[in-house]
Amino acid sequence: SQQGEEDPQALSIQEGENATMNCSYKTSINNLQWYRQNSGRGLVHLILIRSNEREKHSGRLRVTLDTSKKSSSLLITASRAADTASYFCATRLKAAGNKLTFGGGTRVLVKP
Amino acid sequence: EAGVAQSPRYKIIEKRQSVAFWCNPISGHATLYWYQQILGQGPKLLIQFQNNGVVDDSQLPKDRFSAERLKGVDSTLKIQPAKLEDSAVYLCASSSNKGYDEQYFGPGTRLTVT
Image (cartoon, rainbow over all chains, first blue to last red; front, side, top):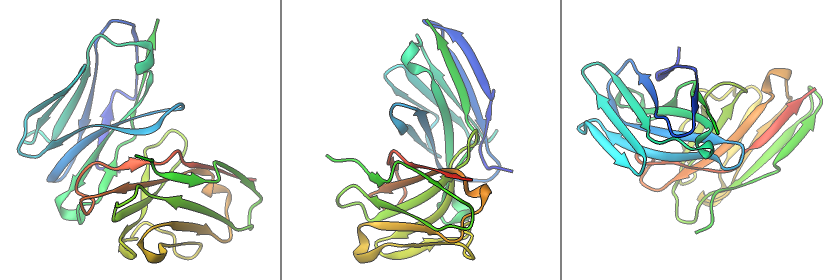
């Protein structure tokens, strides 16, 4: 199974609402990254959070990391139609030569 | 700053044929990656280069896939012979700090094997 597992697999919300997705992983990490992928812009890096950090913000994005639970969450506030995309968490594992391993993604649909 | 360039963008071949993909990373990025992304799944690392040396190719099907990075800049990924299950998007990415930080992805090559 993949290192990072996103939950839910799909999410449908109205424009203006918040969207929250979670990522769980199995082994110790150096950092955890969130990426967005849509047909227009391909795969784009959003936020990187290191194992000694608990929370990071970037614009309307907020990422938390709980290493004791081996989980992370991505919150998108005041969503827009342009946020419609697949969101992937990717973990950089200490035990795997720092290889970046992607989860299966959460597909987010923001309805106008 | 120019992004990661890939070509071709689309390729359709028949099974048992061969195909090659090309990638030009961001200037100055020492680390280059090739990923395979099957529809509905996350990207899977095939091979990682640090300059022109291979760091990780543990998930590369070496009986049919090969990759090289000449002079530590451009890279090519080849499949020979292709199978139906190789239908996927092949993504190239690069990063600067020995791969510890964020990766920058190219637009990908969508391969269809019929």
